[in-house]
Image (tube, rainbow, N blue to C red; front, side, top):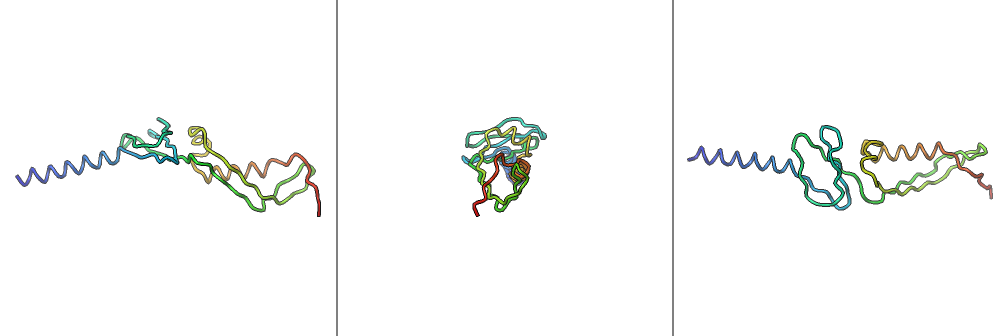
Amino acid sequence: MNLFRSSGIIVLVILGLIVWSSTFIVDERKKALVLRFGEINRIVEKPGLYFKFPIADEVVPIEDRMILWTSDNMSVQVVDGRRYLVDAVTMARIVNAQRFRETTSADLSRASDLRQAHLRSSPVQRPCRDDA
C-alpha cells in the first residue's frame, strides 16, 4: 500500500511538471513567437494561456507596446558636410513579429543598435541654420 501511494505521488509530480512545462502565458502587453527547433512555428498575438510541446518548443516574448528610444548628443552629418549634435527620439511598435525575429533575433538592444546606425548613416537632407 505504501509503495502504491509513493509511486502515485511520483507519477502526479511528473505529470504536474509535464503540464507546467507545456503551458505558457502571453501577457496583454506582449506577443509571443513559438519556435520549434529554432524555426517559427506560430505567432501568438492575443493574451491568454497557451500550450506548447515541452521539449521541442521555445517561447520568445515580443513587446507589443510603443517602444521609446532616446539618443542625446548624437553626431549627424548634414548634406553640406558639417556635423551637428542632435537629440533624437524614436517611437516604434513591432507590427510584424516574424520580420522582427528575422531582422534582430527578437532582441530590442539589437533593434536599438540598428536604429542608431541608421540615424548616423543617413545625412540630414537640408542644411541647418546657424542662429547663434
